[in-house]
Length: 275
Length: 264
Image 1 (tube, helix red, strand yellow):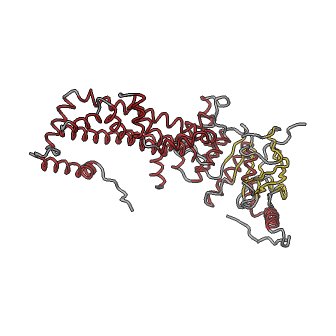
Image 2: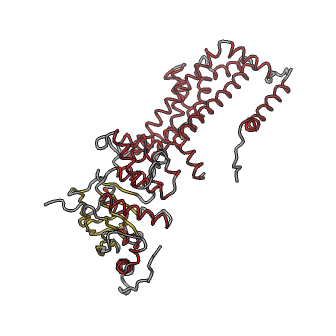
Image 3: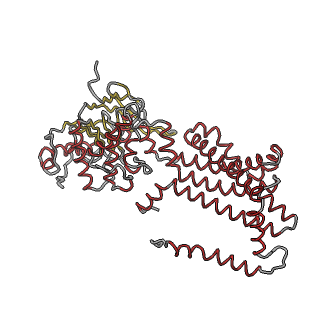
């Protein structure tokens, strides 16, 4: 057997127990991510997306099943995996400059001291923050802070970048900019990205594949290949009929799972977001 | 709303200085020529202060030992309290093991320990220093534990996912994050230490400022009692000023962040 998948989730389940109360969050979650893929996990708020991401990142142990990363079972955070958290203000250290924030995780063994300035400068350039290394995080806007957090993830040179609703805390325009920034960056660097979001438009727009998570406990409702042209564009891509169909499909799956007792057929609102 | 501009230079000096200067001037004029036993003229007090403590031998025989006791005692409290605080703050097991003992000692008024410490260590610097540590270490320890425990959960996850070493976690994440609370602990510890220099020397020393104040009072040398009291006030004030300076320097990032983001 070979490690053909970069990430391989097998029958992943998570149940939280507090006293007599047991909350089943995830059950039988299975999907894979291959090298170079951009996969979005989409699901309604409170569906357990963050819990899933924590299981994959080795931050919390699943109750059942396992995650294989490069063929090995994840029991603690792997060295070649980086997480971009939702709240940048609680992820960057305010007492360190941006450059120092980026440098902190670069361990001696993998990153000799003399190579670090180059690595940091390159990471900053990749997120459009050239020359901002000496600035403190709180001197920058929210969007720039999240970019700095992404630069830290890039400098760490992971094989996969896990992103947990990374644009949930920024304004709409910044969000669009950051979507294109991350897309362009992942294409340019051949980076594998697993991107968690509740935003259907964002998921369909960015992903090569969309994994729809739904139900209580959450499971994979469908694993959809996004057959849109590789080059994405905020106006053109979102005007394609196929884009509308895909987001309708995702929307339908999420709605159906929300109200299992009611009629399963849903009409899709004729909303087509064009910025 | 607070005033957005802070006065600077001479204006600030004037705003801050008028009350102390007025009070001293009032004291000076009202006490001039006083015959009352307990209210000697300020002029006489200041002359004695200069003669005995600055020109005379007292700064060496009584002031330096007091300051040395304070420095060693408070310094030990800071090191011990912070180190143990980080250790206990990061380990729930250690906390469970030591929490009841901590709560007990914190609640024990440290002057109550004087008779026992005096009995064990006898008169002298060892007893004075021990008493300062026994009093000042608790607020520092408890504040450090609290500060370390309240490190943000997402920050903890970031630290784990980037596999930071234990040393990196302590120096770059835990200590800076808990810094404001740790310094709040130092501040309480500082006040307790200043009180305990005096108290411990009043009962358990043959020299030092505290000894001087009580001894002179018992010998009805009231001018000297005033001198000692004023000196204690000045020393406490200066120590607090020095401490605030250091605090502002160490927590500079926080002050600048507050100014930049407008958060209070």
